[in-house]
Length: 527
View 1 (cartoon, rainbow, N blue to C red):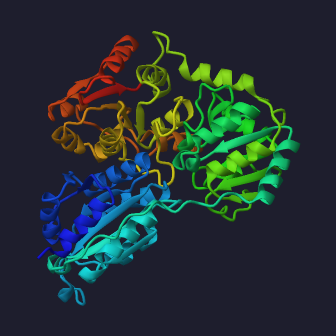
View 2: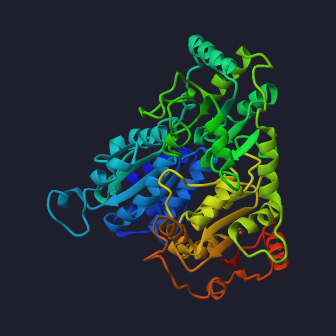
View 3: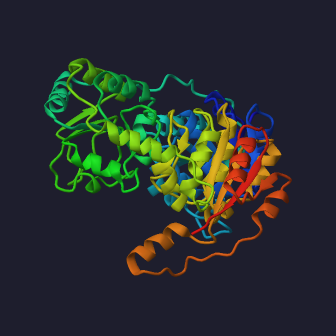
């Protein structure tokens, strides 16, 4: 008779799962053999955090929940950072952890923790599967809640004795995802009136603008009305940065010119914006702006983000309804010259004698990548440069974690991206974040992945150093020493380069990124 583990894997298959990322363990033995005999590929990773980051980025790029798997105790707790990252970045993810047999959970026992309680603060929903009969409902609920807007993480705990029990049952059929309602006419009319009355309206495109696939609706509205758009870090690509309406991201420009532009705006149309992405106090310090909130959920209650109108509906439908209510002369590109300056600054290549810095390297990186290629950024000072100065031309082509903002995501995230998209992939990372999950290079080579890892190396936790110097004039506790990163990469059997001139950097990018090879490029940063 099939086991509960077989049934759970059948349920994963019914959900369309292709990969399960994780580490093996004694308490998930039954599940591992069920996966072996299924169409789903189990990907053994080198650390559970890497597995969770892979599931996180898979979910963000595809819209379908990524799945990560770990055993009990330390396996489960090692997943937490990546699961929490998915939750705060609104990426659909389902985590599955093993557990000891129910006969020993009432007392202290080896590696046993109350994992359901541990996960409680960082997931949408989680539960222990206490009986084989509830497997189909539990899996269907985990995926439905993970993928429903706003998406996030869910968790299932699977005790080993339950996994071994016999059960003859079928998965619950997967239906179309629940669609958010169309916007109500009264809210749309009020929003259109606010925008029409404004002298300097602006669209603030957040994570949800990309996540809900509303980019086409934003672009249609912008093309007709000529209203400027500024994005959060996670909203990059909602509008092409080539579009004259784009002001790139909130902090773009040599002196945060985009931030000053939104400060000048008198009406902000916030599309798919979460205040966790960027504190609204920075752009609405005096509480003077009219705000239109367009999202799948009501706005968080916050003094500096108290919208005049909230349209809680399907985001694309809401934007289309607003567009229908406004005349083509209702807005104007009141800061077009700023766009030209921002794009020119972001795409101008470095001079031969310019120092090797992240910002100077980004124009060459952008030039080597096609519009649809994907850059997965780690977290650190390089993330700030990428967010502010790397133009994005299509949605979901610049993946930045800015909810939990966890270091270590780039290499495992790029691996997941390489499996998920038909485009070239680049992992942009600092030396600190790189070495946190660099072992996943072995996982990538085992899978035959081909992407480019660019390591910006300053032997320091650079972002923290910058902040300390700004506060105190010096830094402490941030200096690192690193191995020979080229030799380290080559030990995995992959290509590695350390270009020292801009000509060598340009050649390294142009040769590595379009290739199908896994390559590491180390850029030694200069002051």
